[in-house]
Length: 101
Image 1: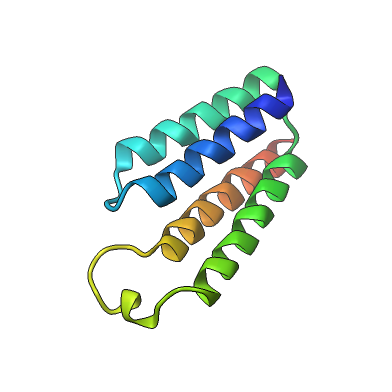
Image 2: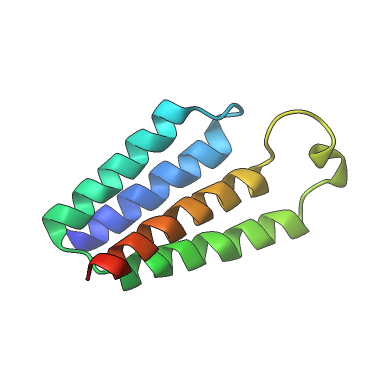
């Protein structure tokens, strides 16, 4: 069940990054609330959250390296920026988890 929850959350995040061009607070906080629910019910440790954040950080770096420089001038968030936002949010959740452990 735990591996399913990791893959489910990761697929939701990647779906948000690649399938939607505009950012939505409802979608972001919905996924975060779902992850917090998984943390509470499955008793996930903060190391798992930091590992997921590290995976997202590597993914954002790879996206940044292979992105078109013109994308950063036009309005709208490029994929690397959206992934970096997810990385930051999961780092914050990991810090709060570590503080509460």
